[in-house]
Picture 1 (cartoon, rainbow, N blue to C red):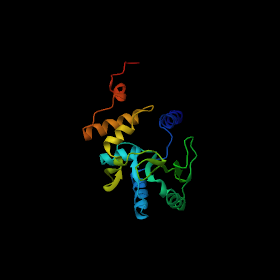
Picture 2 (picture 1 turned 180 degrees about the vertical axis):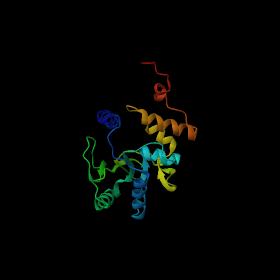
Picture 3 (picture 1 turned 45 degrees about the vertical axis):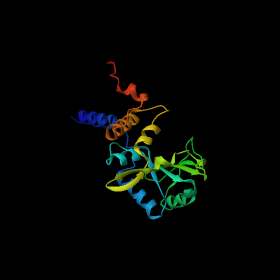
Picture 4 (picture 1 turned 90 degrees about the horizontal axis):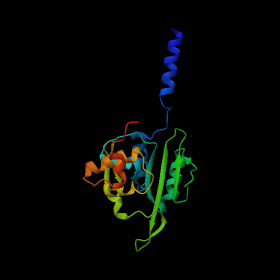
Length: 193
């Protein structure tokens, strides 16, 4: 009997994926409120941006993707460092695009933008300013996020995965947006293997 229990316990251990850090709704909302209190204008992007637009959490998130004005980088860094966050080195780390994380595994993926008087990009990513007017909610708290049409457009032009497909499909269904052709392969029935 002990051998059978040991095998069942081993099977449960092997079959379950290791615990991965998660940016829960509570953790994401705590950060958003902190930014709001410090008057740092944050626009949600990525997975939490999608779920905010949908008004509900649809999947687990490893991080919180945010867009901020490049001029706010020093203040944001100082604020996060004061909460125990530090730089998380990545191959794409730049002064205008970087990740900070804490000891609990919470990560904030920071993207920045800056425009001149003629609306030309100066620093950071070339976000169209009209994409910043999405409205969403995390745990019923209103948040700013990339708008739904732009969010769908931003989820094209790279190697897509199942999370991208689920996010884009949910946005297209909710907001009446046409599914980008790049996602056709996810819509096709897969042959039995």
